[in-house]
Image (tube, rainbow, N blue to C red; front, top):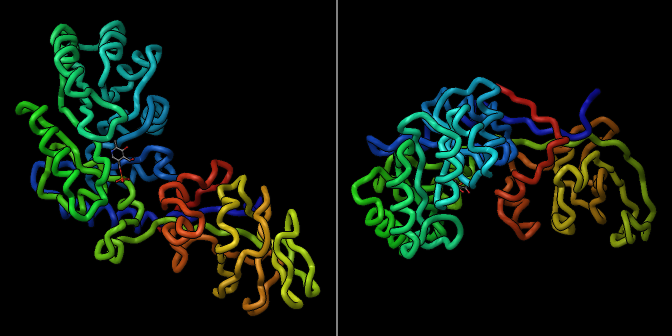
Length: 355
Ligand SMILES: Cc1ncc(COP(=O)(O)O)c(C=O)c1O
């Protein structure tokens, strides 16, 4: 059954991006490829394989469930679980050799109760300014005491997350860096995310936790120009027809054909992650020509003005996101970030790996 819409992911682009990032890391800093949220929509297992082969010693995921999925697919490298776990997941963490981020005495108790092997590694998270996860300065003495009493656990590293990694001046990032290295008290630490790795690689640390640049994106122009977006999203044309001037298109007839119009309907909608708020700005490519979205995007279908396409026909492929139509551009149309566009491509959209 041919897919209605699908994404093509270039392994060569992923490899290129991975090499590009690794080349910038100082000696002693290992790449931790962030493959959470199904590798930002690119498929965690396939991307994990590519990144491990390109030298990432670590992968980072959101949850125990995501980590177990990597193990089930045979990925054997270190896996950092970033965003917490439940008491009943402690045993699976240990069984699958996943490394949890820890910031709470309750987490320590759950792990100890699950009887990990002596020296089971954890990464202690500090809140150095994000105000989200992590031990605050106030909480630090109590958590330190809890950890000192946890005989089986070993703090392999302390870490923190940047709140403004993309900020050019780096003032807040520097503050966070100072706070973390002070809290580390000589222990290994890690802080850099993707943008900060590209900007402040020399800060080093045990790991550089890089996500978005591995998929081909950076807010820094000079790096964006060198990275290769790995994902192309395509949809099939399911209808082509002429509409008279003034004819409404889509729910609410919020678009009216300004003149006689050749309308092509694409087999993609917001259930696939082609968000309603992309309209009225979004454009697809049909026959290599811009085809502006015309009318409200519906659950499974999107109509475009195919007036510039040479000979649009049912069965043709339209490009929704790809060369010339970056996730950053779509994000601009929808008033969001490329992260949300990429992660928003829903699970029902098949992922196809090329080269
Ligand atoms: C804790 C943590 N580290 C690293 C990253 C990677 O960030 P980026 O995709 O901006 O490189 C994320 C992503 O949100 C994260 O939550």
